[in-house]
Each structure stands twice: as C-alpha cells, then as structure tokens.
Amino acid sequence: MAFLNTQGRWKIVIGAVTIAFVLIFAFREALQDRTGFRRPIAADADYDPKKFYSEVDDSPTDFQNATDEKTLLSSSFGDCTGFPNAEDILIVMKTGATEAYDKLPIHLLTTLRCTVNYLVFSDMEQDIGGYHVFDSLDEVDPSFANNHKDFDLYRRLKEYQSYSQDVRTLKVGDNAWNLDKYKFIYMLEKTYRARPDPKWYVFIEADTYLVWSNLLRWLDTLDHRKPLYLGSPSYLGDIEFSHGGSGFILSQAAMEDTVGKHPGMATRYQKDMSEACCGDAILAKALLAEGGVKVTKRWPMIQGEKPTTIPFDQQHWCVPVVTMHHLSPEEVTRMWQAELQRENSESPLIFADIYNHFVSSRLSSNREDWNNLSDDLKYTERSTDTEVKYGDNKPWDELTDIEQEAFTSLENCLAACTANEECFGWMYHDKECSLSRSIKLGGRKVSDGPSKWVSGWMMERVEKLKTEMEPCKPKWITGS
Image (cartoon, rainbow, N blue to C red; front, top):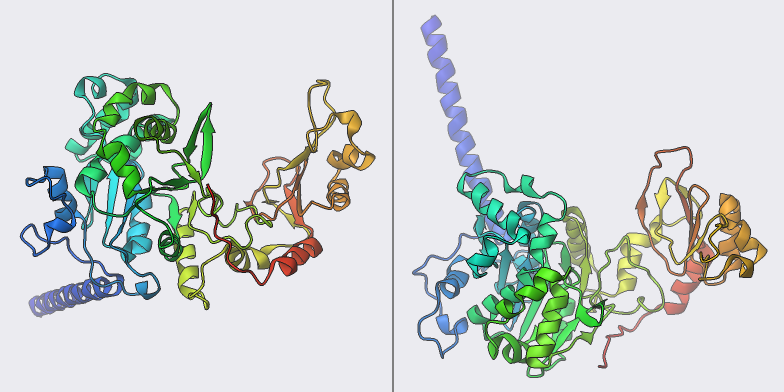
C-alpha cells in the first residue's frame, strides 16, 4: 500500500509538470502574439540587403551583416495601430552595460515595438532576449583603450563578461559617465556605415521617451536633403550642442556631410573627448568643424524633462512633445499607456495633454512632505556676505518687506507668492522659501529633521492659465 501511495504521488507530480510545461509554452506564444516579440531572423532568412547596405560596398562588414541579422524584425505590433511605422527613420538608442537590463527592456515592450528600424549601442556587446546590443567602442585604438583611466570600466566589463559575472555591480561613482562620452562619434560612424539610406537618424538614450506619432508628423514636414542637426541646445564654454539625453536628430544630408565624407572622426576627436566632460558637446564640435553642421534649436519639442518635472507655462502649453528625459521604466510605461488611452489620437500630443493627464488633478493649495521643484526665486535668511542675491537676483536691501519675511515661516512664504503675480507655486523647508513662475508637480520628499517639506500651488492662477491657453492649436517650433 505504501508503494502504491508513492507511485500515485509520482503520477500526480509528473502530470502536474506536464501541464505546467504546456501552459508555459501556450503563455509564451500568446505573449509573443500580443507584444510583437519574435525570434531574430535567421541568417538565411529572406530580406533585401539593398535596403540596408550602400550599393557602393559590395561586401558588407561584419557589423553591417550583424545589424540586419541580429536586430529583431517584428511583423506584429499589437497595440501599435496608432503608431505607424516609417522605414525612412532609424532610431539609435545609446545605453550602458551596467544599466541595460534595467532600462532597455521597457523600450522593447513599448515604443521600439512600433518600428523595425532601430539599433542599440552600449559599451559591451550582448544579447538581451532576442535583441542584440552592439559595442560602440570596439574600434577604439587598443593602445588608448587598454591604458586610459576612462576605459577602466570598459576593461572590467570585458573581464566580467568572460567570467559570466553580473556587470551591473561595476557601476561605481562616475566610471560609467567617464566612458559614455566616447560613444557618441563612434556610434554615429558605425551607424552610417551600416545604414546609409534612412532619411532621418534619431538618437536617444535608455531613459529618453520618444513620442513616435509626433516625430513622424514633424519629420514629414522637413527636408532630409538639408544638413539638419535638431535638438535641445546646451552649452559647454563656447560650444553649442544638442543635449544627448533629450535626444537629437540628424538628417541624411548631415550624416553624409560629416561621418560620410570624413571617416575617422572619432579617432581625430579622441583627445578632445578625453579632456571634456561631455561627449555630446564634442560631437557638436566635430559636426561643425568637419561638415559645417550646426545645431538647430527645437526646444521645447525636444527637451530634457518628464511629466513630473516639466515647467508648464505659456511657452510649453500648446507645443507638441517629441522627447522627454530621465524617465524610469515605470514612468515610460505610464507615458506609453497614456498615449494609447488618448481619445484624440489623430491630433499631436501637446504639453497641455500631459498636464491634464499627469498633473492637473494632483495639485492642491498645500501639501506636506512634497517638493514641487519651485526654484525660480529663493529667499533665505540675510547673509553676512553682501554679494549674495535673493529672489529675482536682488541684494537684500532691494527686497520688499514681504520678500524679506518670506523665509521666516510657511505662511510668509505663501504671502510672498501671493504678492508676486507671476508666482504659480511655492515650497518651504527649513527657513528657505522658493517660488516658481511655472507649474511643476515634483514629487514626495520626506525630511530627515523636524522641518517638513511643504509645497503648494496658486490654484486660481493655475486655472486661469489653463482657461486662457485652451483650446490649443498645436504650435510646432520652426525657424533657424
């Protein structure tokens, strides 16, 4: 009887395992159908290499072969009906091996699902599921990469990968940032060699959100035959450049006039990269010097904020959004879902839409344990340093009585905001009062000490601005 009981238990176990395998296989196939995930095309699959390779080069490089064999080409987009594909646009995403598994997968599940034309670059070649990530730095001169301190992380990544170790643990201090600045120009060169045909090259990072539908509408109005370098302007000394995290766009003509006609740019600017903080700045320097291509400002369509940090004001309200920056995977998901749920998907997504969806209902006249990022005017206790400025960059003696008292209490901080007709929000913490000329949501902030973070918004002014600005006609940013 004991033997029969044991045998019966084994039959139950075997049956349960069999059922589990069937369910897992069925779930995987269902997930593939729903998300558009498919295995990478095989090396001998049918495709036209002329779509990807220059006709001048009859023998594509290994990298060129890899970009077509290893980039997943999906034929089913599920919920992408509102996000039409455009073969003339190539999306190029830059990430790092220490963050790839944390930040890249959500893009593969959302916006990158809606295009078959993209490349992902990092500082280590690897496969994430069925998707291939290319090493942007494998063409750096070994004598430089093997000895320069900025490449300490790069060498450790190779070592950890060879021993199947978790490379995420290698991110310490600024080591990833010091390496990242070298990727920009090398990434451009490798991209153009592999894909010289797209009309537009859109470069983003792993925490950048791309509003695909707006991008298509916008680029459809521009001429790719002109050397355009579009982005959100930043400055490093006398260098004007497009901020990499906000994303930037290069036309086919701009790519041809620079990395196309002047190969070896990355090597020539390697010393500049080693001495500068920011690779996107050196990229701009190289584009201008080698091809005469300069930045065309398209802020705030291309910009570096996210829904909780955007300064909503008259400058933003009716402008279509093309990019956002610093989004966590959870925030990318929320933004993607918001796009899918839009009732007026035929019209461009504008900043007002983001405000109404993410911000409007979350504002109040007073909220404890909250920092609403008010930072346009700051009032503190009078300093003994006479060079210190307060509020709107004024010396202490030029402040009004209300402004001089603003730092003393929460109530006086609110009074200072009330007295300033341009003030939409205020924040008070530990004898510091900050006011904002725009509407920002911010986030939860719990103090370690007895003084709480308290924020509030001038609700009547907020509603007045909204009433004055709406309904909106989308205002695309144009001009030189």
